[in-house]
Length: 230
Ligand SMILES: C[S@@+](CC[C@H](N)C(=O)[O-])C[C@H]1O[C@@H](n2cnc3c(N)ncnc32)[C@H](O)[C@@H]1O
Image (cartoon, rainbow, N blue to C red; front, top):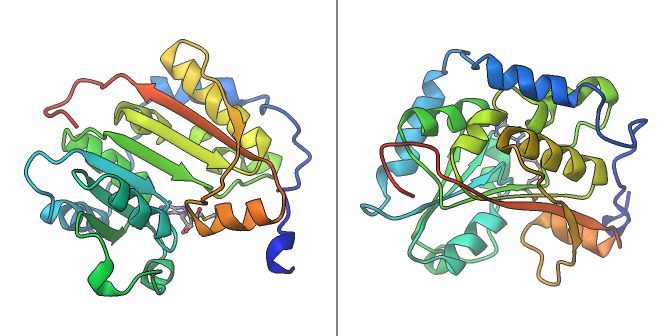
């Protein structure tokens, strides 16, 4: 497949999954208690080590090669920006700036978000902004629980508060993400298409250059009780 010929996820699923409401309700009712892996605890410590005291937090969840993390750190110089990805290879890839020009208010850590999100919550931390940019869509109907909004970790994502933004090139993912959020919040959450004249991530650039529609869900979450403000 050539660069500007990337495909929209193909799926037999054309609308919100029939089990999504039940899954979200179940995940709200039965807290997720999978034990934490040590490397994820170490990743949280590393992620916070350089944070100036009281700096509001931004999480770039599944940051891939981290171009969005860098752009977010440049746009929010008074925030501490954490880019998390499970792939050491992606995190290590060459950045679009020389080291001397990289923002200093950010950090990259390798971690599994399934633990990292819960560890942030356990530490009483809250986010000012939270980006989930082009998550793996898992378009097969039987893979629904691998989509973040249908995963048992999703209630923790919501608890972290802040302005939560998810972007995707699969309409169904945006619809489902908004539906699951709305189900947890008890009020409808909209999704929308948008233009990306200055793409935030390589995936966004590739989809835009392939003339695909881009979708996003942006919600301001009320902060859940915690030990600190974002
Ligand atoms: C489709 S890529 C998008 C990367 C980037 N946000 C972008 O738009 O260019 C999805 C990313 O999510 C990461 N990812 C998937 N599951 C993850 C998990 N459980 N924990 C951490 N990262 C994960 C993958 O390694 C991958 O880099």
